[in-house]
Amino acid sequence: MAPEVVEVRRGWRILGLTIRTVLLLVLLFGVLVTVLSLTPRPGTRAELRAAAAADRVSFLEYDEQSGAIHRVRWAQGPLIWREIGPEALLAERPAYTRADLGGDLGRSRIRATEPDDSGRWELVPFWVRKVPASVGGVWVLGAWVLAALIMLGSTPRLGNRWAWLWLFTVGQAGAMLFLLFEPRPLWFEAGRRPVPRERLGGVRGFLLALGVGLLSTGLALGAGTLLNLVGG
Image (cartoon, rainbow, N blue to C red):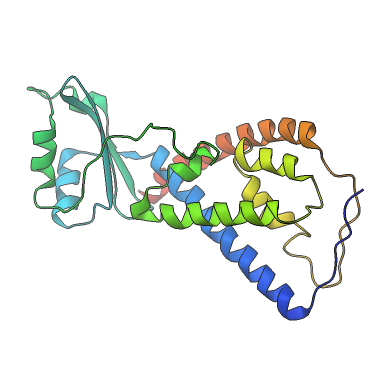
């Protein structure tokens, strides 16, 4: 049986709703940054030089093989992402190198890095790890960790802790779903109680997490592509 939702004093209820809302907004911001970063618009070296000269580059990474850079991706703030792909860079003669990249960046203070594939924070969802610290990644990671601690320290109504743990990790969107629906939907007014239902266990939670993870990833990438096209 689902645990009974206990009524709390008005002040504590408002505080709880505020915390849930703030954490949810931070996580949604992280999702937006990630999907935009994974679906960048094509850029050019001229655009990179102009952004660097104006000190608008907040994050930059490059892929290098055998001394030649074949991909450069950068952010101009958290919501504008550009990429120069292999088609443009591999056509450079001689090859585009770190020295060329340094020349394009000029006196910009941005530090160019290679992608980090070390696998740190393995339990943290992929999209949380992809938000760079320079565009709010620390806040997004902190919000996810705090939501996970709240889940582990509570008695969820819709599923047990194992079910929610799978949704938080494999399901990708579990933290946001938890903040929306536990212990009652975020939009419920005081005194309104959800209909009691059987809680999900760990096995069903894992299967649900697989489906939610695939669905949320597909929707997020599609939305990121559309937003980049619309936003220019």
